[in-house]
Length: 160
Image (cartoon, rainbow, N blue to C red; front, side):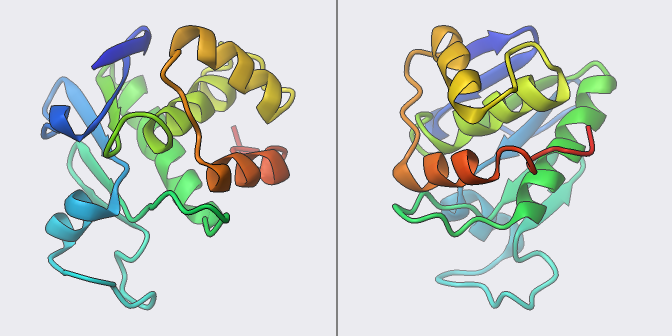
């Protein structure tokens, strides 16, 4: 687990923990976290109310995979930012994890630092990525999330 900014941590699944009064956890992996929290195996119908996200107290479970082509839905990133800001404003630590801690979790941390906290350059995904990699050298975004962030950067978190 690595602190990338004050109270913001990125890690892999080996450091998966539950949220608490002092820690909010974003589980950025379909398997096993979202599946276990929502109670399904395989695929979940996209009509299910918790298809993209399931929030339970200080835990946010995201149905997110790391495909080579961008299949992401904007609502997932909006829900993440809403959750992260709410718990950050409450003074909690924010732990964001995915399976390996290299692509999804750090991409979400980058988005939070650039768009919500504005502590890294947010003029483009490329510039935010360059600054974030100084904070988290293990950042290796998948081609799908890189393409999605590059193509949609102007729209991501525009409400903040």
